[in-house]
Length: 243
Image (cartoon, rainbow, N blue to C red; front, side, top):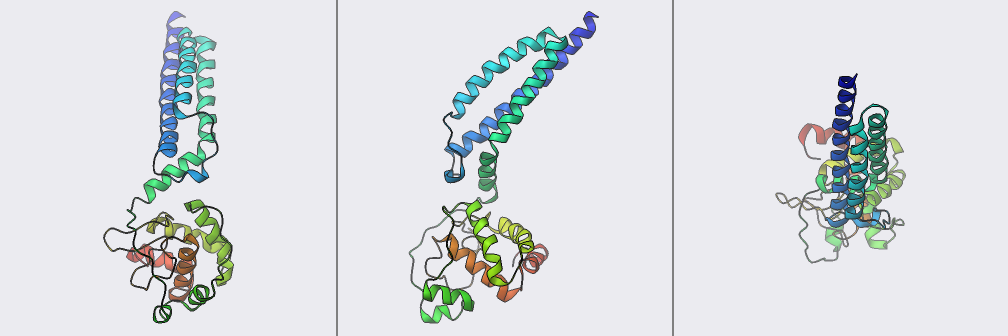
């Protein structure tokens, strides 16, 4: 009987150790999101910083480890409690996980350059609808912020302006996630391609470098003119690794 209890206690301690490591990893992600280069606008207001959460978490897990060492029901309760803590913290940390994922997906360096207005000659090489928008200044309302999530929301709402349904958002999401991670500051260090759609070989429209809206609209117009739809552009990207 003592051997069984010792085995239960040891198993509970091992499970608790794994849960503690997961807890530390989640707190680490929160720290990177809060103090790293991620866009902070989409992070929820948090009165407790990573160090506060880490310190209190260690105190709780110390108590749970004491219970786990006793074996039996106490060990099982400790294991379940540790799992509940991890799941609750992970659910609260979804925006932080998305912010860190964005950093990983868009590591390209931003190289600022002087902005110049589009000339009439430059506008002739633009897709017709974008040239009209640049000329008249009539761009659709832009969501607040310039985060990848805001760009995605803006692109999804703009699909109907090009005759596409929402089903075209899935391939568009994959396409621009692969190209730039939806980072409006993205610059390919090898080719010099710019922004969310990675503009290359075309005149740069006025406001393009610092406007998520202009980048999204230019990219959608380019896809419409060259491929007809995001699905076709994504198929080309998968085959040739460019579009």
